[in-house]
Image (cartoon, rainbow, N blue to C red; front, side, top):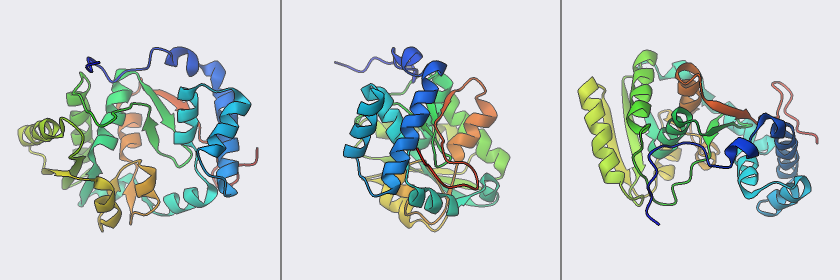
Length: 249
């Protein structure tokens, strides 16, 4: 079936699946999954165990999985996270689809997960296909205005070449940058992850694989959404307490 979406908005069942009345159960499930991951259990078996215990739907399980991490992963990610102000006077490498779709989802009223590692993650699924939506241009403007506000001198956007419509998105990003005088470059690459991991300059992403190995990263999507998308539907599943890295069930 052709993709006819015009918004990066919520799933039809999200109003019920992520209603405030479900947050307690979702947080308990996230805490349990963190506990299992910290003790060497792996997915998908750990997620299946937690999901079955709390009778979670497939979409709720995905939210818990995207929010959870082990204590070792948390420590590593926080140790390599830079304050957003560190982008001043620097070049930033941007995980294009990762950052863009999260800001789009926030603008479109989609569910945004406040994950255990401090990132914001969306629930959108591209499955190898990207479609421009009503929120695409506003999201690009918000990212650009935010980087200008922070004093970031330039940005290198990396887009997955195998994702359909990447070429069109590249041209759109370049057009927006040129119109606003933003020093951006956009590259289509087979897989941004290795480049982001090897980068010696800060990267903007919430991709867990990149966060586990990169040199330094900034929490750009979260900063943009918190500062400029006050209507974002954030579901807070961060269960680790600051200064107390434990996740006892």
